[in-house]
Length: 70
Image (tube, rainbow, N blue to C red):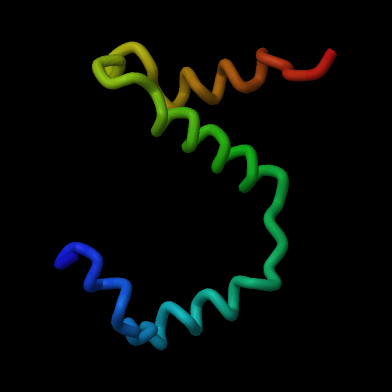
């Protein structure tokens, strides 16, 4: 039960984090930013031990050639 104690109390919000989230809420994401997020996600989920074979540039290059829809 001790490991669940964190859910029984209210954690104060960070005012700086709240401010940044509020400011960024209405900023649209560009296609380039979205593409870079996808590349970063794919690179971050590469199998362990592939650090020397899979680079962010190799993921970027593969993303230009692989198409999901015909």
